[in-house]
Length: 444
Image (cartoon, rainbow, N blue to C red; front, side):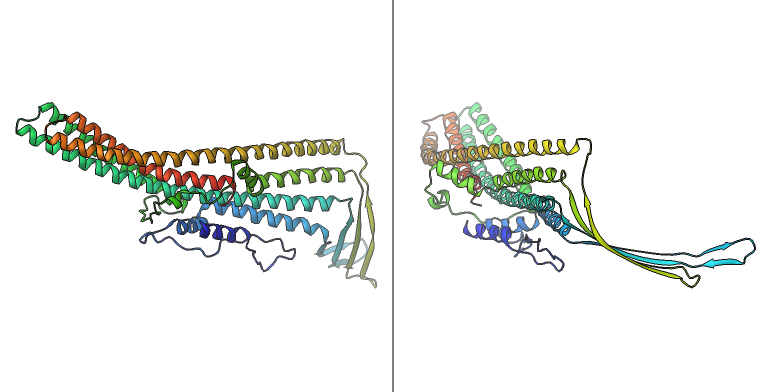
């Protein structure tokens, strides 16, 4: 878990240096330490997460959204600098006036103009702050996607291993049913068992073969899910490292109460920070809308050169500089409605933040309850398995001695098969529930 947390943290915070970034807005870096998947080797969970973070297409899409928001912030900051435009023209013209010879001219001209917004009653500042809030929102959204990707890989990894264990369990069960069928067939030949017993044992054995086929299918589908998260072909076959089946791996590394977990989640969850950033952006929209009520002051300067190629005074150079004040008088009540719209959207964003807080707390509570239930179920299933093993052993010996019917033997074997699968699935259910709880708290 520590290795996973370190890798995720490195991706979320590392800076990015670009050759052209005068406003230093590019701060989100691409994942570092990326590796390609080598499925010929045994892969552990941290390696799978590292591969998935570097190659998951949905996560890469969200990363590009962050870069676009950074560029949008840079574009907004450009409004603090002057704009300079240059124009040039050249032409050839001729004219003939009655009684005079034909006149031909080839005039050309060049002009350059500068405009610099000096003051606009806070519109630029509010717009820049709004773009910063939108950038923060995109960054938190990316971090949420990053953690969701980690969770999805965790779930796919444990699901694959669970299905692998189920396949082994069904194969073991098939061997048991085959053994019972062979024993019943032997007893039938000796006249010690009825034909119905033999047919029942045979039917049960064949059904166990079907269960093996279904388990193989489930394993392939879970492998396809994992491969998709890693951007690999869906038919990729994996060799995965098994987690140690001890108490430490199923236990959570915190002694916090549910209420404390909720409070921790409110501090850490990027979804909530995303909602808060959008709320700030909506608040700045009010200031931007209000600013359109007020005048704006700009500085202007221009220089030009015109050459007519005719007469003694064939060229003309011009220059000007000054200030201009723009005062909005009436725009059909648009500003009034724009301000009202911004206020309503701000109120909407506030409600969204509260809704997100409630959703986060509920998610933590549910994840904690699911984890506790999964741990209890795992403990019970281990006890059931030990009991089922002993019951099947005694039942088979009794059947061999002619003291028990085939129906009772098959029943105990079915209970053993169910117990095996119960232990396998409940163990990985604990690990999945644990991962869900960590994600709900915001710890990865």
